[in-house]
Amino acid sequence: MVRPILLQFRDIYYPLLTTFGVPANLLTIVILSRGNCGLSKCISVYMVAMATADLLVMIFNVIVYHICAYHFPHSFLSYTAVCKFNIYLNSTSLNMSVWFTILFTVDRFVAICCQKFKTKYCRVRTAAALITTVSVLIYFQSIPFLFAYKFERIFNNIDWGCRPSIDFFTSPAGIGFLWLQSALAPWIPFALLLLFNSLTVRRILAASRARRGLRGHGSEIQSDPEMENRRKSIILLFSVSGSFMVLWLTAMVSSLTTGLWNTAHYRGDYKAPAYIATETGYMLMYLSSCINTCIYAATQTKFREELKKVVKSPWTLILILVKK
Image 1 (cartoon, rainbow, N blue to C red):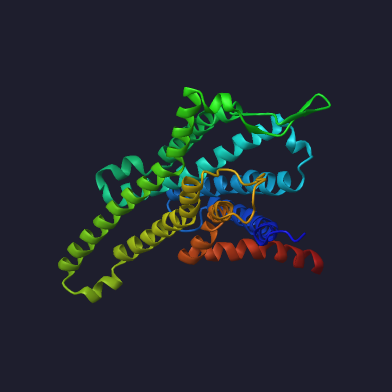
Image 2 (cartoon, rainbow, N blue to C red):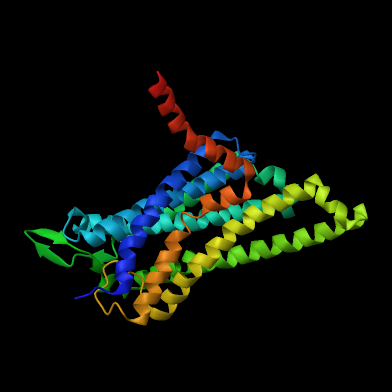
């Protein structure tokens, strides 16, 4: 029997995604940590945090869950304890990827729109404190996932598989947790991104009109260093937040309309529109966790230069060793 086309595509897509996504995020972490990209230390901290969260998504959500657990259903990953812990890590990784993007957007909003507050907020210490606080809150907020699933069967006195616990999800605590989870990832983040980006755009347009009026000639704006730096910052901000919203939109809408939240171990009709929409949404959602490197390379000249140096350095070392 011929497997559905979407399953065949999935078998190719996820390995290719990790083949690009894992090295890309590792390179991003290394390059930004060196601090030679011409970015402020505060921005670099947020971008390193985003790349780290995206790397965790690639490892736990894609490699472990959608590749290993999917293709090897009878491995140790199917032990109920391991399965529940993996679901917990899936939630924390995705939430960190989402909320670190929010922190980056808020930082750029403050830097552009709140000049008086900028010196106090846009600091490395503040960024590190916010990232740490949000990470701790996410890890605590996802703890109910460890109790929301139970074993599917018992084999040789070992609990196997994971399935939702009806007792948990029908309880007031479970209903409240589901509501909180569906709001935090990612409807509230979407609203925050739209809000802060809208306010930033309004501020930029007002500042540009005022500066154009002071300089007197619109053509001179192009040679204005301040406007050029602001333009690069805005391109980076809108590219990161815009790509995030576009790639997550399908998953949000399909999960809301179809009611499917997990397709890794789906056992229904693989040709059903609900499954196709949900699986496509997941594919695009995980793509957002490896696209930021491309954005940085496309919008930041110094990042491209550092990327070339890092990529060339192993080959340079090999050539030196060969010559010796």
